[in-house]
Image (cartoon, rainbow over all chains, first blue to last red; front, side):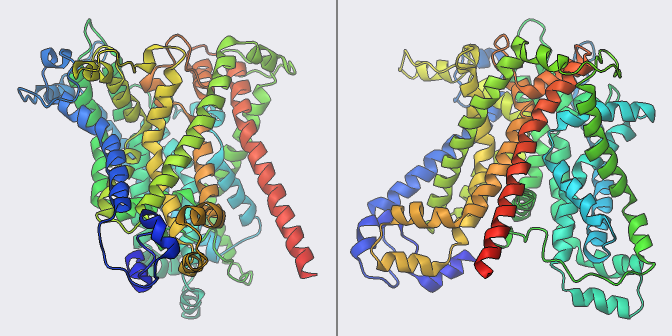
Length: 314
Length: 311
C-alpha cells in the first residue's frame, strides 16, 4: 500500500538519507542510487536487527552445546559438537523438584487450557460485539465502558477476589477455573475488537437481514458470523499467543495438576541440583516459545494487525 | 499498514427501535454483564475494601482505616518496589519510545527487505516476557555470558554484568523490556508516520525544511494519536511488570529489583496477608485511576473548546 503511494509521489522516499539535496535538489522522481545517507540507514537498521537477533541466536547455539562446552563461556560460538540431547532432556526428562517429566506435561496442559479458553472467549466476545453494535439495549454502553476500564486494571488488583470467588464455586485451582480466568481477562480486548469490526460493517447488510425477517440469532449466525472470518483470525492469534505466554494466571489459578508450559519452564529453570544445566534450560526456553513464534512467523501480517487492534483499545 | 488504525469504537449506528428482541441481546450478553459487573466492578470494590480491614490469612471485615497503608509504606520491600517501578517505568518509556520512533523513521525510508526487518524487530513480542527474561539472564550471566565472551575476544577489562549488582540490575531489566517491546512501538509509530499526508512532505520540501526538522516539528505533532496509543500500551504493561522480573532476577540480587506486582502476589501467595496484598493492589490501581481521570478531563476540555469554536 505504501509502496504504491511512494511510487506515485516519487520524490518522497530517499528523505533522511539525502538531507543536503532534500533542501536544494529538484523534486520529482529520482533515480535510485547509493548515497552515504542510504548506507547509513541500512547500517543502522542492520545493527539494530543484529541486536534483536542476538538472544535467539545465543539461545539456539547454547541449546545445541553439551555442558562442558557451555562452561567454556564462548557465548557466541557455534557448537563444536552439535548435540540434541539438551532438547530431548528438556522435553521429557528435565527435573522439577522430584518429578523428572520435562516440559511435555506442561505442553499438554497449555493445550488443554488454551483451546477451550480461546474457543469460549471468542464466541462470547463476538456475541458481545454483535449485540453492542446492532442491538444496543439500555445500559449496554455503561457495561461496555466498564469492560474497557477492565482492560487497564492491573491484574493484581483482581487476583484475590477472583481466588475467593472461584473457591466459593469450587473451581479454584482446576482446569475450568483457569479457563474461566482466561475468558474473563480476554473479554475486554476481544469485545472491543469485535465491536470495532462490526461497526465497520455497512448497516445496510444488517437492515437487509432484518427486512428479510431474520431475528437476533439468525442474523448473527447466517449473516454476521460468515463475515467475521478475518477478525476471528486476528482474535485467535491474539488469544492463543496471550494465553500461551501467560505466567501470572498459571501461577495463581492453575493448580498443580494443570501447570501450563511457562510455569513448567519456570520450575525446570529454577530447579538446581549442583550445576545449572544452561543447555537444557535454553532448549526448554525455546520449546516454550515455539508455539507463539510459529504463529508469529506463519501469520505475519495478521499478527501485527492483532497487536495494533489490541493497542488501539486506548 | 494503513488498515492498522482500526476505527476506535466506530461511529455509532443510529439507535434501533426498541422491540422485544432486545431481550435476546441481553440473554446473549449475559456472560458480559456478569463479568463486567462482578469482576471489573464488584471485585475491585472488594480489593479496595479489604485494604481497609484487618484481613490476614483470610479476608476479614474488621475496619482498621489506613493502618494497612501505614504498614505498607513503612515496609522496605514496598518502598524499593515503588522507587523501582518509577525508575524502570520512566526509563523504559523513554527508551522504548526513542528506539521505536527511530526504527519507524528509518523503516519509512523506502528500504528494501522492509518486511524482513519488521519481522526481526517484532518477533520478541511473540515471546513471553518470561522467556525474554530467561534469554537475557543467560546472556548477562557474569561467568558464562556476554562479559566473558567479549573478554575472550581481547577486550580483557570489559564489564557488563548488571544482574549481579544491586545498583545496576534494573538496567538489565530495562534492556530486556526494551528488546521485547520496541518492535511494537515501531509498528504502531510506523503506521502513524505513514498516516501523515504526502502533501505535507511535499510542502515541507518545497519550503526547504530539512527532513529531520520535518519529522520533529511537523510529523511528530501530527501523529499524537499513535504516540498516545503506544504510551497507554506501555504504561499498562509497566504497571503490571511481573513475569520479566521473576524470570530475570527473581527480585534480586537481594530485593533490589522488587516490583509492586511482585509485592502483591507475594503478600497473597507466600505471606498470606490479604490486607497488605489488597492495600498494595489498590495503590497499583491509583495511577490508572489518575490516568482515566486526566483522560476524562481532557475529553471534557476538548468538547468544551470545540463547542466554543462553533459558537
